[in-house]
Image 1: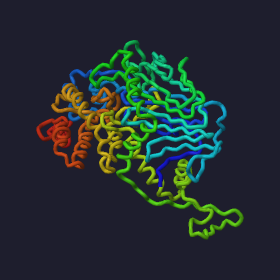
Image 2 (image 1 turned 120 degrees about the vertical axis):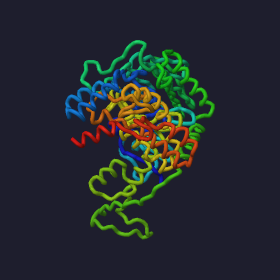
Image 3 (image 1 turned 30 degrees about the vertical axis):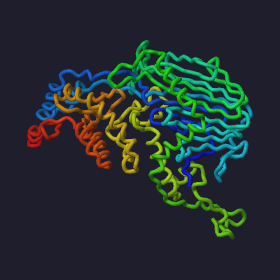
Image 4 (image 1 turned 180 degrees about the vertical axis):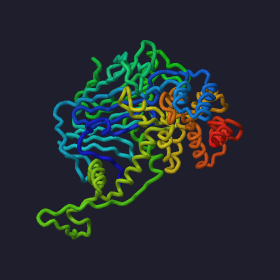
Length: 528
């Protein structure tokens, strides 16, 4: 049975849109029948730049805090002193912008999906996320739109099929210094700059700060490949008229150069890289690019399957409410399996107490799909929201919350046979260990390295401002290294185990022991 999430109406908000991604580029597809919004992200677009904790006198302050707690039992004074061990807030993962597609007049309003599967009749509507092929599909008024993000070719592609396609494409961004361009008659570009800083929580006058010459540069390029008809670029839009088929190829780049380097400031470089990526893929053609994408995704996704059965949903027959058996021995009339209902209706039914084991199996498959879409070798590790975010000031910075959330993202990696998706957090640990070694020295006077509960692309490893009970939690490094050990154990890879896992063991108080407070002091405190 095909694994699909499907809905009979467009997404009403970002949370209802369908996610696609290749680990680096992420998109949320709304499925609008007249005006489609595809919300865009790229994994290296963050606010800010490299910075340190700015903590001075850390070991002396730590000794003072231990004295206040263990000798004087003065928790309030210790809490005040803890603030001196905390660094600045982490930075925030940023939205890239939107690709907006406006269809020609004549597409009717949604009229409901077809519960038997397949495309709807003209005037009907259906949108779905095909987990087997990693493609979001919208059927509306005789127009079929497919959206996928190719890992082999580094592109987001939109394929539109209809009897005669008329469409206008635009790019929008919430960020500063936004400029559109038209390198040729088939191509539209957008460039801009991310914030120099985003204040995540505190109520300040200007929580989002843009400064000239500071912050990450970015670029998006979209090119139209049309069969027949005309394509023209101008006025910040791409316009397609009377095409028999249409593919839009989108590339995205940033000026990120590494966690410990300032972002590049050459405005020409990101769009040039976008155009080079599109140019390298164009000779394949849309059909071959789709085949390459599906093959790449299937090699990972098809390794594991889970079937839990389908629970029938009984419906009374018109007239007498009976469920008569069919003469051919098939399903009784008036009965259909839950999988024939839109996914949001299935979820609502389960919440109301219905039995739908097939929905549990679908969510299992969806979890693996999301990990594949957000974590690939060479990309950044997925953050709190994977690689999908629409807010300039997102909840909890949309960063790497390392006191459980990063770990949760990757719990299925080894046990559901996706070890490649476990490599981005291994890269994160390598970089975090370098930042964390500085924090271990400055804050604790220790060797090795340490990390706390929040990390960003600049590998913040220090404690963030806040209450000591959660801010001063120094165990993130140890927990993250456990994931490296798990990867090596599943692969039985002693090389990985020795060069990447055990080599990144964390801060030690004394050889062979880990401690946040000297044992003798703890014993003395208990004796009082």
